[in-house]
Length: 245
Image 1 (cartoon, helix red, strand yellow):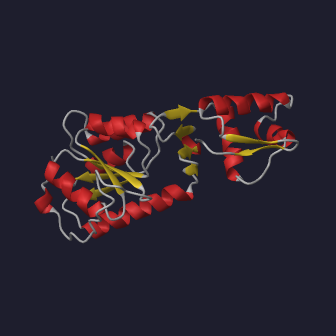
Image 2 (cartoon, helix red, strand yellow):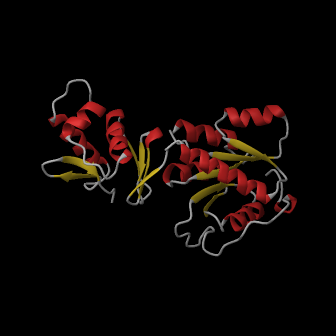
Image 3 (cartoon, helix red, strand yellow):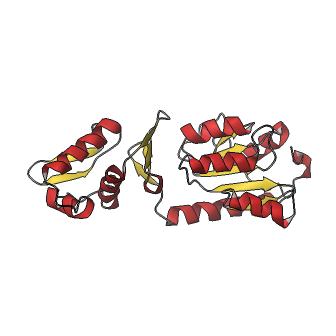
């Protein structure tokens, strides 16, 4: 571990009773903290729980498993972890196609250490000891930047990430889409209230001269992979976005 909880300064974040690990987070955005120091992990969970539904992982391996199976909006990852360190963990997350923003915590202050973390896939870093106000501000900034890319869309209780062609279902299962399936779901989710005719979908998604029946085939693929209700049929008109579950 890099530092103990007692090295932190400016403990100003709210420790809300319904957002921390083990609590009922309600509509709070989910966040993953990967930290092997139990005291620091507990303190981070307490501070962040006023703004996030916090998931804790005590090792790189546990963090990877959580990242692969639990959709979160932002991650806080310690640089030094036993076994799989933070840089390796982030690299494996990125190779799995997960683009969730990551803030790396590190006590290593050299330029090369910071560069290696950013080159490994981290979006930002924060040197220990740090002020919790700065931590919260950086997390807000990362979430704003990620949301601005249109990379997260909620469809019913599922989370759709167009940039990674994945749909995260509420049971933790992750569905990977083909390029055409992803293009179709992206089109429908761009305008969720619009009813797309088969010709509109052909023009936008399948411009290679396919027959209108090809649209029905890809709609069937999405329903089979995700859920029967992911695409709604509007008889006589076409298709529009449905709900995932």
